[in-house]
Image 1 (cartoon, helix red, strand yellow):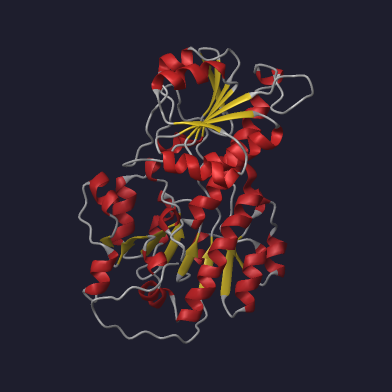
Image 2 (image 1 turned 45 degrees about the horizontal axis):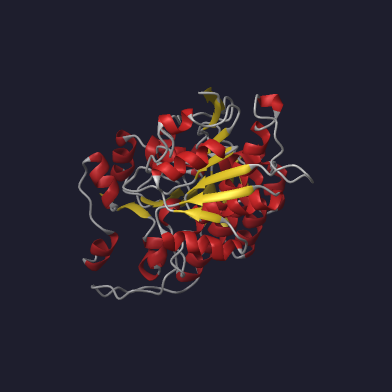
Length: 394
């Protein structure tokens, strides 16, 4: 997290260690297979004086059994009521509608926001409950990075290439090409839109398999950074529509990995560009959870992940890391466990909020107030920044 900032109002904080009581519920979101804290993370928390309550079967979709959690020192609960009786709740997806009545004033809840699927009524009820809601999407570390976003992006980038490889096969009416190198056979061509973390990992995976890679982005700085991080020659270009159209026509795989701007991913590939792609080629639009990079993209799910348009196979599942839930859960747990340990060492969650700007950055509601501007603008709600609330001593 970032270095502590000077706040406008004096505050008395305690640095004595306290034991937290942490609840981990089952994830009831559609096709959400991850769990927020693994048994290894639970064991570390318990060894440091914290109590952890885990709802039965919470880890089963990620192949962590109730016995694994019990052996780690967790208390097992039979339903969400016991979980939400804990002062701190750590989950993966947003609190579902049916669990909102369990929220209690003064409670801290860590979860993803999943802005595209957010319902205004649920947000209003969450604010009215006077909890401290902390969103994974905005947590920052001391280097200024978004650790949860980066971690899930790394997984999504690698998976995008593996998914494309699967759907390139004849079994799925793909072009029947191997996404790899074979002596005497021209390599497959992979086009990647974006030059962030998803694109970096997708580039590494595609190059590792032996594919030829071209990366498009609207920032020369990001393109240079990607080339430096990958450490291998990669053809890069800024987003010229004519050149993009030409390259898409030659591509076997196209990956949408552009970041959202003002809440929506820039749509840079038109329907006509997709129409000009090879029959049996594959689009994996990782950016679909923010609208997608391709005009022809639409949301799909893990049960029905693909559809075909103009002979091109489209993959539009928004929650790709849930496809490898154990790896994703371990990665998330590795981020959240140290945050919880630090909160205990700092004297509790509220004190930690005062001392850690990176944790404050994740807060979207606190003491009955909305604290994120973009949510206020999206839903037409009044908002107050966390820094202003802290500065006024609220």
